[in-house]
Image (cartoon, one colour):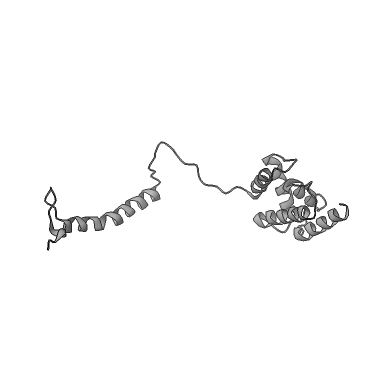
Length: 152
């Protein structure tokens, strides 16, 4: 029986020697790639990739309105301004506040009130709140939904 690992190739290197060289190929390649990534080296140096950034909650809310094709869309600046105004008046912040706005809109839609979008919900929730004293906007949202249901 022939031991295939000992057969020499055209350049005189045996199969056993080739396996030994390949054993170090993958770990060495991984080290080189990791070092390049750590140093910011790219495989395509002429094409710099923009940094990955998560959009703000206001931009995410607008994107949901665009995707749902809701009426009365405002600009990205309108959503940001409304979100910032509501943030200044609510205890909830960031994604928690965006989730609350989404919940209020869902409740309105679920109860047949379809003339609102995330922008108008933020504007309507912020309007009655005093400047300076942060309110629990979950309660404000519940009250707003109740008032809208009464007049629907």
